[in-house]
Length: 288
Image (cartoon, rainbow, N blue to C red; front, top):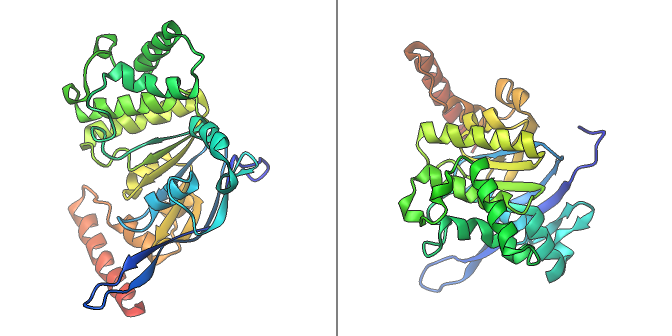
């Protein structure tokens, strides 16, 4: 992949928050949520960002596209530094980079029908598209993500969680973006629906040639969908590489603990892994 130019270059990106330190006299302290993160993303590639809750995954994704302010560093999209973009340039960025969020139902407007939700990005980013063409595109996109045409006038509460996430995927794809950030996009779904949505994303990526930043705490899911994996621990990158290398031959103890936490349907193997998890926890405690 190094012979190609990345579509996204992130260099030394950091995000800090000022929070109350509590206590009778108050005061504040600095929380470093993301610490000098660097990586490249290529066209058509899926980069998995994995780590437990609170490690900075979502903060990183929001800072990249300026939904949160970065303290330092840069995120360069197709040669332009996102941190220096003006409002018009940011509007164009929103068309090219879309997000799918963790809670399928909460991310959809309950007062809008499925058709209106999917069409909304077209109204914002492509106002010259006619009403008839919008309707055609929405119908095509619904079919692409596995939603029936007669669902177009239903409201979010009338759908299952998996169907709501399919609406979210259709909404993200309707502007023909180059990159979709999937922020824990399947973690709220049950196992069978999760597999369906992951496979749908993989099929759509192959068909459309889009890139994915796939954020998850579940390294087993990330291993299935991503070509490369980046492991975050307390806001820092502790490991990054090809998915097979990271999962089969991890170098960092935190990555080993994430892999060891994945259940295996074999009692003997699971017992051995349980002992390994205990050993790794003791090693981490001693290092701390």
